[in-house]
Structures are given as structure tokens and as C-alpha cells.
Image (cartoon, rainbow, N blue to C red; front, side, top):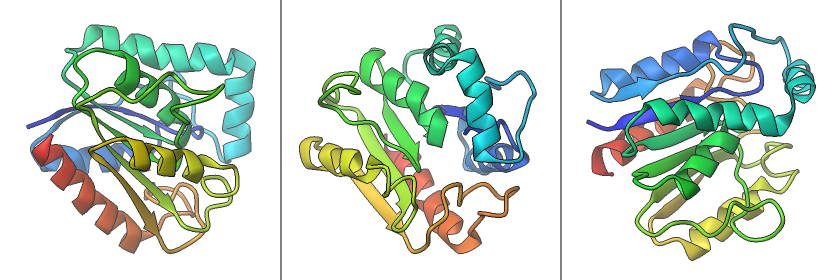
Length: 193
């Protein structure tokens, strides 16, 4: 059994994010799904990003980081897109992290946007679609490849398609086949970390 802190994407804590957490729970894991938007959900990524912009990206990320204060340190930190910001920060800076699951987004581990180097002994899986205009087009895939190149226990999985939120069953971007494979890989990861 692994304990996971899962952060939602810019459209909020949708039913699809909740369903994914339930799939992990069915695999025997404890999954926390904090709602950083206080119950709000948005119909589009742009609407969600506008809300995040009103609050402030740094403040919203730090809301997620503060959630971990109430939990034990031996967690796997997971994030969907925007949720990668607090998840990756916690995986990199909070002592005791067991792993990280980064869906559709990834930050570099060197340069201006980095939280610093990846910590030794913290496993990571990164998942994205090979033609996602955000994950690939905005350079997150380059950050993912940097992590895989420099970190001992790091995996990058690319799925056919061009959707960003492909593992959220409540959105039109959902891809059932890719999500089924992603879920198998995530459960295998959680069983071994």
C-alpha cells in the first residue's frame, strides 16, 4: 500500500480526477485529492487558467504544497497538468518522498524554472501524449527527457494522440485505451515504490 497526494488540473477536481483516484484506491492505495479551487470546476483549460491567474500561480502552487503539511512525508506526489507544479515541487524538496507521477506536464530540473536537482532515491513516472500541443508543443517533453536522462529511476511514457487531459474520464479529451495502459503502469509503480 502506498499513500498518494494527487493534485487536479486547471479545470478543477473533476469527476474524472476523482474516478482515477478511486481506481488507485481499488488497487489498495490511499489517495488524497485536495480541492485547490474550493469546489469550482471550469469548462475549459483557459477558464481554469484565468482563475489560477486571478489567485496567482505561485499562491495556487503553494496551496498544494501546504496540503502536504497535514500528511506523512512518505508520499507519492501526483499531479495532472497544473497539479504537477505542487506535486513536482514536493517530490523534489520535501524529505521522505517515495515517488512522483507527473501527468501531461513536467518542469525542468535545471535552469530558471527548476526547483533544483532531482533527489536521489525518488522514483518518477511521466505520462503524456506524443502530439499533445501543450506537453510537446510547450517543451514539457524536453524537461521529461532531461529527468529520464539524469535520474536513475525515471520513466517517460508517450501515448498515441494529441489530447492534453486524456486520462480524465469526465472530459471530451478522454482516451479510454491510453488511460487503461496509464493506470496499469501507475499501479505497477505504486506497488514497487
